[in-house]
Image 1 (cartoon, each protein chain N blue to C red):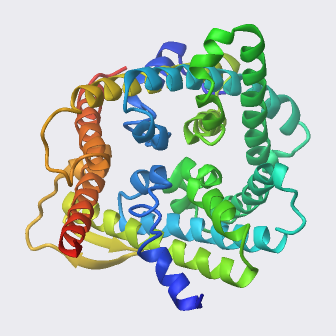
Image 2: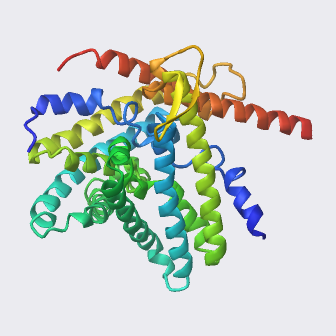
Image 3: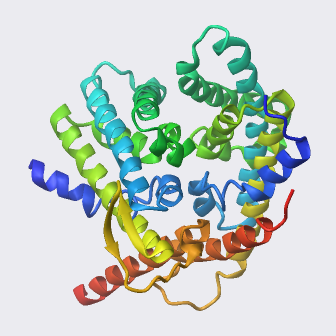
Length: 204
Length: 195
């Protein structure tokens, strides 16, 4: 087990959205723009790194029958911290993400990693795993957010900088509304399934 | 306290701010247990019940315990504990008194403690400053909206199992594309009705 491959695994095979299919609610709800996607994944990453670290440090002391309530309390503590920090230092982002920051607490990715990884591995590898999974989450959110933002408004504006501007403005407003999220993730998943199938057929 | 009428809150919860299609809360169960109508209706029944109960209990807890003691920062942790305890309690009561209902809801009850729709309803109640009747109404209406969409989705998926489609789209992508159509209907139809 080397740290680099554990890190890469979070982006490819155990990718939270396309590999594990966990945490769909924030993936679809906050990806109206790249900026929101970055904010959401930053919050999730903070909670995931610290919950994995603490679960892993305390894994010998936690009795296995009551481990889930203890995990939830650990996670809820860090989510409360993120909630308060974001409300204090970036109120506009906090308003845009709305109820989804406190809802990180019921995000299946975090409790899933605590149960499946941090509960069985040492603190160092647990943190690496958390960083890998968070990076995977960030990339997926930025991809979906980028597609929706560029089709919906014709440009990508992140923290005041205009990154990409399309020569023509398609402005398919539907892409920023809820249906756009379902369309984007449906098509992305179909493409990934198609690629996997092609690889499998070639392998046989 | 926000002075929104109960009817507005009801329409809001069921249609305009539909949890599954507009707000994206509770999507795991939306793609997970909508493969047939029977399990979708079982799950929805459990959600309506727990959502109404947890909206009631968490309102009382927040207003009469956390706010007077200035413990609002503990609200998230206490709501989670309330929901988990409530699910556990409902499970005991239903198993003891209504065994037939328990057999149909049984396996879905534990799933609800981690369903973000329930916690979402509670948090939205607190954020919109609803009073007691309004909170209970919003919890119930959100559960009802969830039920309607779950039933529609599961009926469509059940009928489309034999449709011939490319194998890459079968499964999750198909579910999302169906959700796209339902969502379009909800967005375009219910946003134009002024209430």
